Amino acid sequence: MIKSSQTTQGLILALSAAIFWGISGNCAQYLFEYKAIDPSWLVCWRLMLAGLLLVSYELFKKGKQTFEIWKTKSSLIQLLVFSIFGMLAVQYSYFYSIKLSNAATATVLQYIGPVFVVSFYAIKFRRWPVLVEFASMFFAVAGTFLLVTHGNWNELVISEGAFFWGIISAITLAFYTIYPVQLLKKYSAASITGWAMLIGGLILSVFLQPWQIDGIWDASTIAVFAYIILFGSLIPFMFFLSAVPKIGAQTASLLCSVEPLAAAIMAVLWLGVSFSLMDWMGTALILSTIVLLTFATKPKEIHL
Image (cartoon, rainbow, N blue to C red):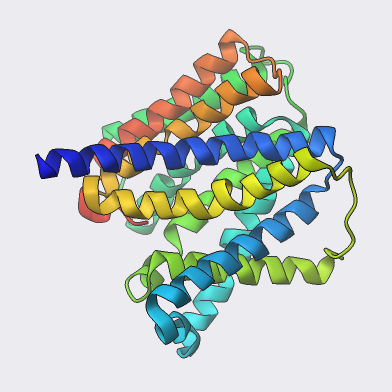
């Protein structure tokens, strides 16, 4: 009975995390379209505030151990690389893709990332992908084709810029997944993520003037901004980490594929985004790649 209860809790936590993440993309689109908020400014503050909250949480939980990653030169260099080319890059490209298209399309395109992970390891270990990996690649390409062309070879239904940044978001997501594996063997995922967010936000702030606040600020802007920081970053991450011990990383990762579906549904219901049959078919094909790759991956190979 206890095991069943823990499993149920884990499933609810993982699904909630995925839904919260999916909705946060729509919140960003709302701020871009209706409140004239700049994507770079939003990324900067999201990273800094969410990072500060995560680091504070780790400091409360583990004390001085939170700063262990700063004491080893090799780990610090890896953290800086991950902060810039992983955390900052994936956040910036994703939000900019939303700005140029919509939250649903940007989120679905980002979920092509696992296919780039498969490709990387195939090249690294000099082996051909297995049948299920080939199938996932085919579904990813077919899904992307339907999503960005609606089956018409001669034109894109989204801008070239949106497609470009969406693919960059997928590539940087793959890097985000692969690169910190060695760090995760030494330090907690919450610590690495918190520091990477904070560092990435501070680095971006050097090129911006984040203290200059533009756009339309009212009660709804503040509420949506707060959602992005809390329910789009801190809370779902903690939910996901809490779900893993209860249901395993493999199942938790699979359930997170609900994120683009949640983003698409919310975009249609809340923001009035037009999502055609071809869009839904493309989304289904891309999501199927996550299912295939998750079941084809041994649990011990799954990393947070």
